[in-house]
Length: 397
Image (cartoon, rainbow, N blue to C red; front, side, top):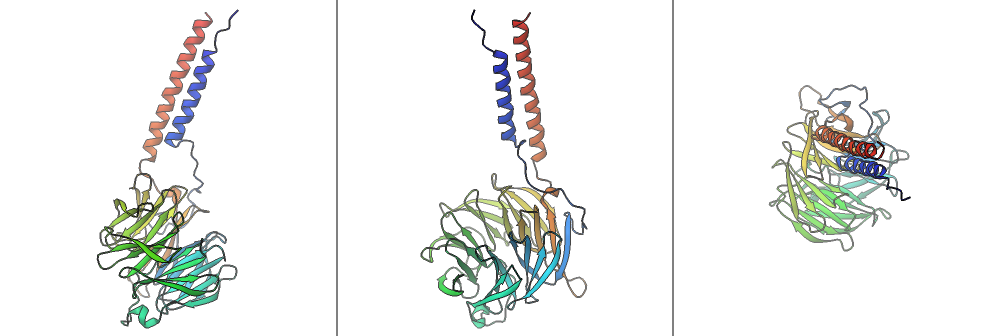
């Protein structure tokens, strides 16, 4: 006697596979490791802790080994250390004049601080929060252009290259980038770039450093870290300020404060592939690799834009405290730290650091996709069960 094939089981298996496939497509089975919003003082429009830190907080850097955020305070000649566990200050480290840029060196467990006014880079050990080395890379006169300027446009002017163990530092007023060895704490090269270099980003896939040059029409220089020479210059990026590298797409995102845009440069072709409209005067930018999103702070509109790298579009905009300039993402806590300059209402003026929970930000389109996805799953499951029931009934009258 020949056995009939178990068609009911086949249909059930197909239904189960279809459900899993659609679940993955709609992201219904994806779990993001982000904490629920905590019960903190919501002093800004976006939920999160707010910490007063003095008049001019600038760049931010995250230390994953210690779970701490480092804050360069331009006017105080110091770097503040904030614990992401308690959201409180744990140290105040004196560095050079007008510290404006920060980078983290995981090989040595150090935070590197570029100080505009003294033309130096200070290395802060994260084990004891003290300066362990200082390297001069530019004379004060050359660095300041002899005009006594220090500005606030050097907030992203340093980046660490882990493959070479070197730092790349933007010399704003000499139109060059200095290369510093972290093993010898000495300058090993100076590379001429465009006019007024500001932000830097490292591309580990190609061993290249991208440099935002704000003046002379605006451009992004691409430096090879194997030769310390410029191998490409990218135009059509407005007047670029800050850069962030997208490890998932191999692309560099560039803020253009004057135009209110973020440009996307392909690391493979060194060409602009997208332009994204954000808020007014976009300044700082950082990348969240787990969600594949860029966070951009818009200084003039006091807002935070969230950009999806899959669509190159803004998927959320939230209000933050006035005059935001710096931003960094803390993946361990699922929080976005934002530095804000004072609006100069009252005296003395006081800047702040805000810690915003990612899970408190409503991402545009997420709810709609989940509703459609669940409806589709329900329809597929119902149809599968109906076919199975009919087959079963026909074989077992």
